[in-house]
Length: 302
View 1 (spheres, rainbow, N blue to C red):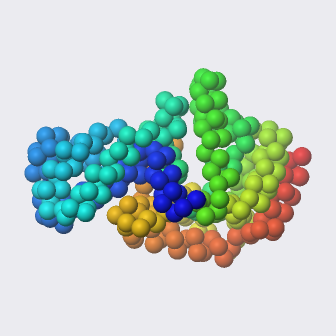
View 2 (view 1 turned 60 degrees about the vertical axis):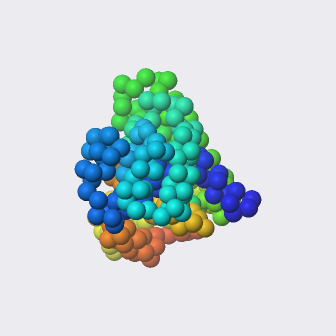
């Protein structure tokens, strides 16, 4: 596929990334121009909260061409920048596939799915639960029942369908998508569901690790550094580079909690997580060594 074709495919999967691009650019323009926020939100007749939602790319916020034009004039943006932002507005109206699942997707995870679907590379660390992109239906079902014992069966199955659709990205060409997953041995040994569920799950991980898009790296128990415990579970997302740098989403780190999530994108924050990844690389098993460790633990469950 031609490079611009790949760009169009990634940008068309949902509205999250173009929303963030528009919002971040408008915020940068406002701050560079010295225009106070109050003047901006009064110009387009919205509340301070709505301007914040616009500038942070929040889902559900209506982006109108007339407002973008007005803000660009107010901020003194050049014609090329204005045209680039206007061109992105149509992309904000393309819902992602996960929107078909309605309330089965929490609002904070709606944003994550849009970013994951657009990412070129993911680098993750998992302490106690295995990555969603690797979870079998049986393992995923056990996780959901543990967290939400009263959830209706239909919604549980919807969430499992969502996981399956997310995992389709693992079949893409490596040039379009790849993932490096650091998994602590504790996650392999923490029993979720029955021993049969765990054995199946670990054998699945060993199998998926052979895909060209996937690199599984296991951090053994007893490594010299407690860094994984300090850093905690996270996902570092990197996005495709575009010919027009204004259409390139910068990296970010996603940290999920029980009731919400954090999205970290400040340079200092990113530097810390990238440094953590470099350290993890020196202590983790990879390739065949990682597969053998996973399969040996699978045998213990059997």
